[in-house]
Length: 307
Image (cartoon, rainbow, N blue to C red):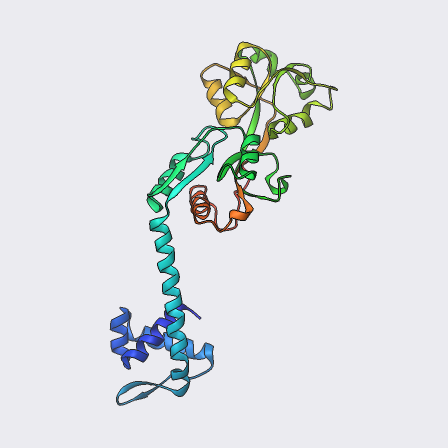
């Protein structure tokens, strides 16, 4: 049963005439007849009889008319409420960024939110993935972006909802002077070098440990940081190797600040996290809807992994 069939049923009942109902609905008279016929077949009862005075409701039609009108009223109220939420959503939303806003498509996201909810204020603090995950879980952030090693089976708190937006890759980077030397290296060779390392909770650390620890008992760590600016400065100065996501690594390679190890890369998910108990919060729903539009996801879908 379709809503347009109910609208046609009610219009014919009120007008008692096919032509007047068609004019009221801005459709053709054959279309009105087809709607009524399809509805009668689905319900298994005759709704109208034709007479010299036009279309007359049958006893069954009279009994069902009130319910059809009530159903249409409920749908109208639903759309009215949705429109009010869309137009009147206000307040502040704190959403943390874990990396370059361009990679996260923030300009497009903010444009979509401004169009749909012009009164909603969005604050965008910058932090590291592991800190963002904890701040969202604790309720100090409304939501946040994070790199997640394996989004499909992420070992995240059940208090969190994880929307997988896309998959990027992490690349080993070194000082530009290492380019020729780096080209001949394997994971076994890299395991012997000094590294600008990550804190325990950073998802990059677990990915890197899988590659290096089969070859060494302990990684040589010259520094520990989750801040990309510090990592780049230390790698560029020759302190050691580092791991950066694709877009930043390529950008810094183009400017001659680092060189990229060409033989392997580590996939990692770009995710948006919220608390599960806020799933019905209008502001969270608004951001989730805008994210799905910006990242080309249908309802209930996560992004396919990039090749």
